[in-house]
Image (cartoon, rainbow, N blue to C red):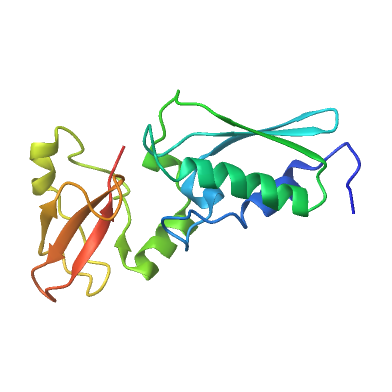
Length: 167
């Protein structure tokens, strides 16, 4: 069934909340904070997104998923724009999204980063293990399974885990 304009922004956001990050399938693009704006132009819905990193390889898939979900929900015309400025920040993530990261085994960005840049100071940051909750952790690599995460190891439970880096 095709929806008729005017559209409801809350309804669009509910559909966007079904679009999961292809690299972290437990967090939606809404919870990740990459959906920056929803606009309406006659029959067209314009969604503006910002990648977590410039050149993020997941953005093409995310754009396609956003379009497919909205079209499947009955919205007749969808445009997805990508903007790089202002740059994405972990401050845009929802608390629900951060909680889902931890449940999935990824340390969420700290509420208040004490050390973010330069990278050589990042080892001083106390990152809590998502498995045993210990702060006795050590960064193994600046890059984890994706560019937006670092790889850590817990010195208490000895488990490796990704940490979603601050921006």
